[in-house]
Length: 346
Image 1: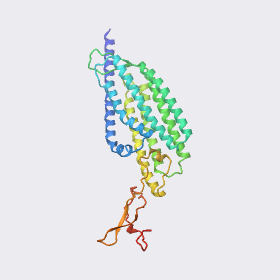
Image 2 (image 1 turned 180 degrees about the vertical axis):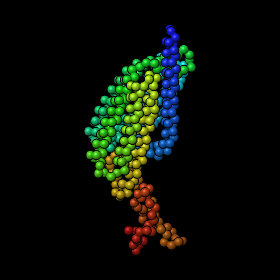
Image 3 (image 1 turned 90 degrees about the vertical axis):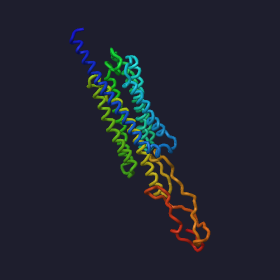
Image 4 (image 1 turned 120 degrees about the vertical axis):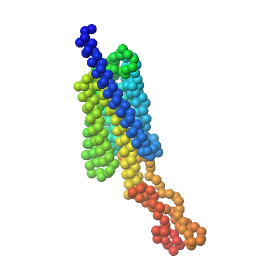
C-alpha cells in the first residue's frame, strides 16, 4: 500500500471516528432530555394518568413513557460500549433500529387516536387511519430491514473504540423518513379539514388545544424528518445517523406531552360543562381524554342549632352547584336559603 492510500485511509478513519463521536454526543443529549422531561411531567402523570380508567390512550402513554428508558439503554450499548466486533456492532445496531421504529409506531398510534377523537369518532376517519397506519408501518419496516442488512462496520486494530459504520444504503433510510413525513403531513391535512368542516363554529378551548398541539407536533416532526432526509442523502457517510435517535426521543416526548395536555384541558372543560349543564355529562372528544367522572354532591347533611346551647337540628341536605373556577362543591350553608315556618329550607 502506497503512502497516499495509507494517508487516505487514516483520514477516513479519523473523520469517521469524529463523526461517530459527534453522533454519540447528540445521543447522550437525548438521554438527558428524556430524563428532564420525565421529571418535569411526573407530577402531571400522577395527577392525570394514574387515576384514569384503563383505555388505549393510557396503555400507549405508559408504554411509551417507560419503554423509552430501555430504548436508551440499547442506544448506549451500541454507541458507548467500546471493543465490539463488527458482528456485535451490527447486531446491536439491528436491535436499536427495531427499537427506534417501535417508538415511532407507538407515537404515531397516539396521533391517529387524536385524529379519531378530533373527528368525533367518525368511522370513516377510523378506517382511513387504520389503512394509512398499516401502509406506512409495513412499507417502512420492509425498507428499514433492507437498510439494516446493508450496514457494514470497520474492524479497529485496537480495542478501545466504539462502533464505526463504513458502508450502507443510507438512501433507504432517507426513504423511511420521507414516508414518515408524508404520513404526518396527510394526518395534519385531515385534522385541518376536520377543524374547518366540523369545529369552525364550535367555541371550545379543547378544540383549540387539539389543533394547536397538532400544528406544533407537525412542525417539530417535519423539521426533524427533513433534517434526517437531508442527512441521509447529502451528508458524509459518518453523519448518516446524526439525528435519528434525537428525533426518536423528541417524538416520544411530544406524543406523551400532547396526551397529558389534552387530559388536563379535558378535565377543565368537563368541570365547566358540568357546572353549566346542572350536572349532565357531555359526550364527545373531551370525554375521550377525561380522567375522572363528574363527582356527585356529598350526601352530608347540614345541621343548625335552634339556640346556642341546644342540640343540632337537621334542616336539609346540600345540593349546591359546582363552581366554574375550581369544580368543587361549594360549602354554602343552609342559612343562606329561605326557610318556612317549621325551619325547613325550600
